[in-house]
Length: 380
DNA sequence: GTAGGGTTAG
Image (cartoon, rainbow, N blue to C red; front, side, top):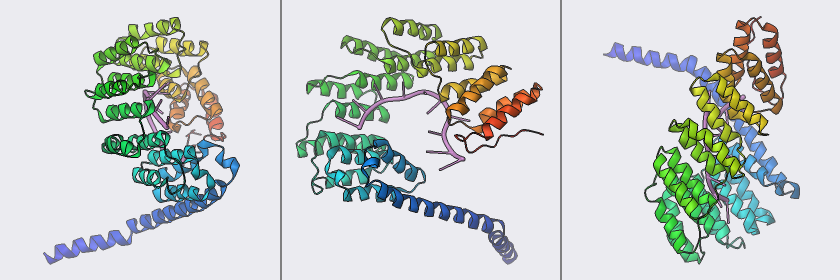
């Protein structure tokens, strides 16, 4: 017994003293350096946010906050947003509402709620505008229980009347929770209050039903939308397109392009990607290529998903010229893709003895400023 | 401030 203990104890000590010790030290150093770096960054952005130039660009706040949130440092998000109280813009409801929204995107609902509650002390008016930000913060933080309370208790208490955006957010919350069987009661409720559902309401519903595999219910939503004279837009068609494709009703999906055309709705890359993706899954090279060409002919730009879908499929099928062209476009446009996507093409080119083409691609990728984390392998 | 598809993390 005691020798077993000694052996285990010895093993534990050995482990502690050697490999893990080194790893732990290294990891903590990197984490500490990173944290230090982020702390410097927050100071820099706090100063910057005092300038009118910074304040005039809404997306800068989002970029800053996202950086801290993705580094898992909510305290820095808070530090940055809390600093905004010292800047005069906080008295502007638009700005404060945006900060509430940002807290939501960082999944920091409690902070969003605190800021909302503090608004009167900050001399900031509080209307349905900021209430809607708080509602969106609930959905983005996935704090669904709290959305009903805000709707049923907080809003009446403050004398704020929910508007269409509020109801659309509530509809989305029901969909996100998977409460599809009761979501129509929300639509009923908004209509009773004299607020007509719009195309966003229905796109939320269409997406939820088609995506969860309830195709027949998705179709009912479509009919309901049309019966209310709501004109479907490209997002509505894309939701249905996705439904048809996942039901394996490819001919009908393709028929949607004509229908869209007749209604004057321009398909976008997401519309084409749905069909291209299906043909790749079905290993139909000709049709996959055909729909890619159609996408381009119709003044539509391929996006990251188009390339990520097609490049491996084309490489597997020996279509290296086309795959190579796509890789060059990815690099030219600085799209964020995994290096493995290029490796498929490089490996295939080497196998085909097109070493020079493979070299060109590797060189291009390595010298590309947009894609910094390059680890492409090129033998020889 | 409300609705997307899909291998997002140097």
